[in-house]
Image (cartoon, rainbow, N blue to C red; front, side, top):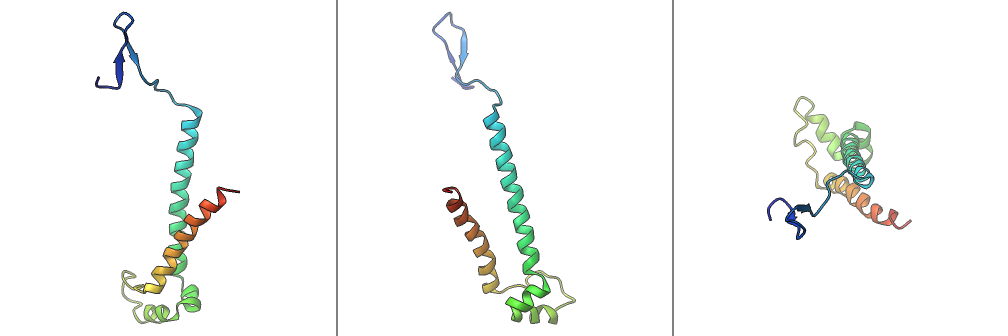
Length: 106
């Protein structure tokens, strides 16, 4: 039957299969999901900010820093087109994924 309900054998009255109520488990799961999304966005902003800092680029990616200094008047779009820098940024998220599995066993 459409709508998720069934017809009861007792008097032809309808009985719902599932009771629709908000439980404490549901609220907790929503809070955890919202915090996970917030932390992912925060992490994305921090790692993007750090990888564009001059001091970070001077220390770890000097060739990108030189290229950035040559094109100061241009926009930042496609200025950081280094495969090594991209691999570094991606490895941060991969390390976070692996560490969540390891932390869940502690």
